[in-house]
Length: 221
Image 1 (cartoon, one colour):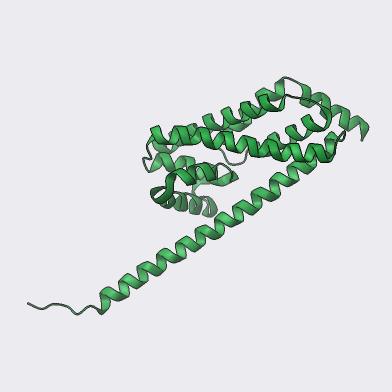
Image 2 (image 1 turned 120 degrees about the vertical axis):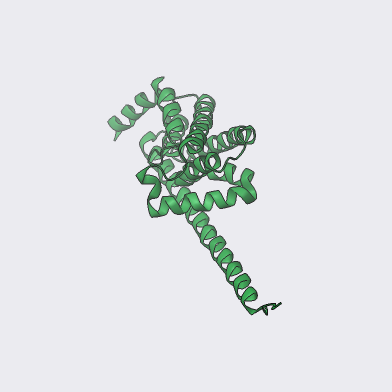
């Protein structure tokens, strides 16, 4: 255990960590399998637990990478849409795109900021914003706000884990990752419930309108 703790401390103390964090945060904005929050939470936990990277610099690098990645996702959505690639047409991903596009028309600003906290949702929101023509002059500042808020939240989780398990970088990193995954799962489930509820209400309204129109007497001239 001591050897592993020492190895983790040395690895996290490397200046290459900032570059890795920056790259992972960028890719996470348009490619779902990259879990950037787990990297940030784990690194922040080790930084607090055993000393390592500067937490403020790490958070700033993550926020900048997230903002760039989100805008790349927006650009991809504007250029190729949300159905071009096979992974976009998977049932869960396709449902996320459909829901995001519908919500963007109603409450775009809130969705863009909130979407950054959902692993798959952020990609769907970013690409959908570009696909539906959401103005980039509005998307850009919102992506900055979302990136800063997300980085602060993730670093905060790592801070809690690191303080709880001081001098235990391995355990603090594992705890941080578990916290990030659990909270991400809860958020994902809540958004999924909201998506299904929103779809159910839409279908109910459509059925109500259809029935009302069917009951209207036809006018014969």
